[in-house]
Length: 188
Image (tube, rainbow, N blue to C red; front, side, top):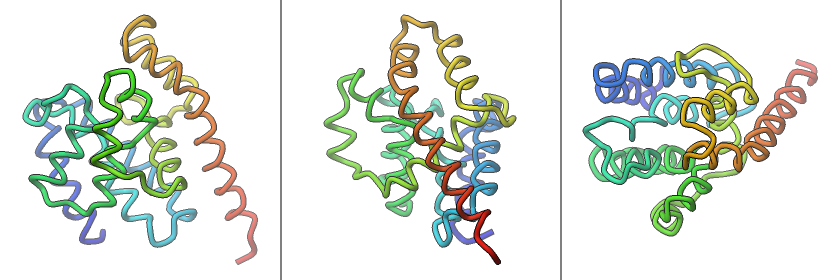
């Protein structure tokens, strides 16, 4: 583990494991997915893994201020944890967060405070999140979107957002799989 991941795991565990054990399991699973695609990220692999384990800390009851977990988590990482700004930005924008922010009337706040990281990193974090069940088990993005819509209800803000985001989620996943395929085809 690098310094960044050695710092990220205990922080995420402290914020999630007791109040939200299932969310903690999901976060561990997302970080595990990040390790499986490290080949396509090169020197950004540790950055992705740290962001993956921290991506849902905004659900922690101690951090939830706006009720929009990407923003709450990113603000905590920036203002309290003094985290690497790239980790903060990835947490803020994970899994098409801008679409949910827009539905909540928070898009200007999100984008005004946190710039987006490179598209390949946003794709990678979305891939990891949307290929992991709430219990941390591997899945696929179609089943994950269906699970989210079913859990929250199709007419809820989250249900509506996730269906709106589905094409971009699937496109992000496809781009990551294409990059993986290219790396795996290259001769050693």
